[in-house]
Length: 595
Image (cartoon, rainbow, N blue to C red; front, side, top):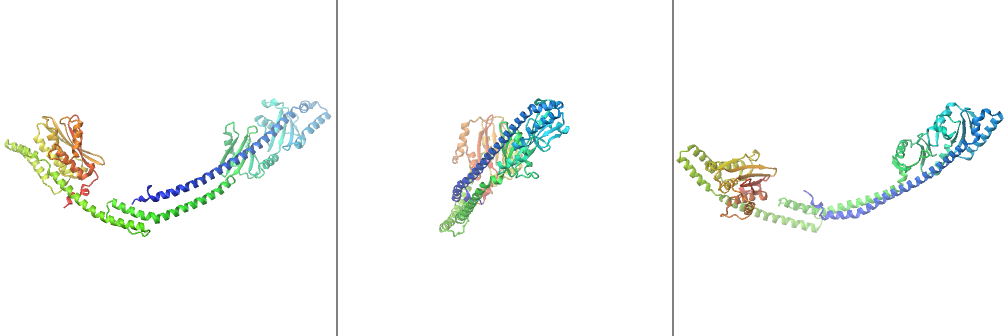
């Protein structure tokens, strides 16, 4: 049984919906506050970290740019160019005096700049170098060629060679764009320790790295172990994220695994300054708030469950019981008796009143039902008696004429049809008959009429599909339709008249059609016929037979059964007899069993 108590219009449902509508704003407010807090904190952390990274990037760019400028000025000094070009003509005293002056000049850089650990001058024609740490030392030719290749291949200032971070320049400067070797090369070795300490002091809270996109290496803050760097797996993704961005933006941020990653890209250095913020730290406060939101939601759910259980016990069960009783009566079960609930005096009073009402209603409906069935059967008997048998007289005259003219074969055929005809119409035991026999009777009737009107009317009959042979229908519903077509439709036809009996069906309705090609009929006349169907039976009315059939079908099948009229093409009328499928007439009216 469908529980209508839970329908939208029920009191219980509306009370439950009201309670939910009160709770939803609180839950929604908590959810909005949680989302806003999380997004705000994430935005603040992102902005703060981006600002720090931007400052770190700018500071390091400034220092390296300043050192690159000093390198160029150093390389352009006459002291180095004269020594490189003319050292072979120097005396021993001039040679070593020039080296001492060069050494005194470069040895102060590691002292004055924390970012520099060494300055080296490579002389190509001497295969030697002068360093601020080791002085005058020999240089392998391959090492000099490798350094020249490194500084020629990239426009970014920072180079890596033998695990060293280098800045460098060559003289002459235009040698960078030719295949010729420069006269000398000056490099500054940068301190990785200095960068590590700077990263650690500037960003204490989160791990920070400087990732070099040229050499795919990184300098990490002191909190990251170089041998076990957990962030190396993100380097390919970092390159993809940064290098795919538009040129007017150097900041990017994205989530990956358990980190929120913020990066600031330096086109000048081709490096990224990156911070890895653990998601747990980022969402610490929102998660604390989510605990309170969960507790509040849990309490709300417990309240809803308690309210629901209480409502079911005190309201839902008694009302569901009463509604179930009404549903039983609605389904035709008038013997229903509801048990007493003992939940409240009010519901017990309603249940007792319902049981008394059901008993009285059962008695009243039983009496009304028997009276209605009896009235319908009497009316049906009266309608059947009104069928006009005048064609029988004419048929007997035809049979007499055949015998008189000794046309014995035709008389034999006609008498056989008449025997079948009388056998059917006099068998009045049941008011219902299977359609196969009713159809056979209609065809037999048409055979009689074809003999009678053989000179001016042609009879056409279709086949009744086998699946409708056993369909129960009221008796003698087809003959009056055929009689109407012959006597009224083709009354003025002196030749080439046609009467057709056929049927068609769909899933819900079987339609039997009787058509003629008589005189043209206009829409006004068809409307008049339709109006006559709904009027009381009148013996003197011209369409009495059709009205009788329509009345009988409505009594048996309801509004879906009956007769309809349509205009035939090119002339004449089509009368359709509609029989609903899926309706058992014997169960509907029980006409044959009424005393």
